[in-house]
Image (cartoon, rainbow, N blue to C red; front, side):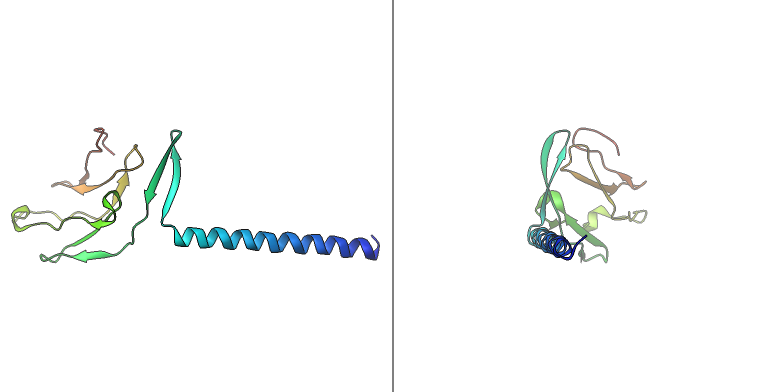
Length: 122
């Protein structure tokens, strides 16, 4: 390869690197400034809201997390009537229902996942 060809190849590679960095930077900025992601489930586009992972401490000392199906509002704190001597505290795990938009958490004495709106047990 002669000297002129080497210079042309280096210029082309340099341009490709700059373009890749610009596109990557643009995509990174877009993902950081737009908390909603579009995904496709069964050929249906679904908007998923990404909530902060913080928690709120309730009066009884328990914690609740944010609900992405409810504009990232916190789940309701348990009330005194919800509790008794045999109450069980479940982990704060959630699973996505097959519809791609509804999240369900654990509840009940056995801490099983709640049913999805379509009746599916996860």
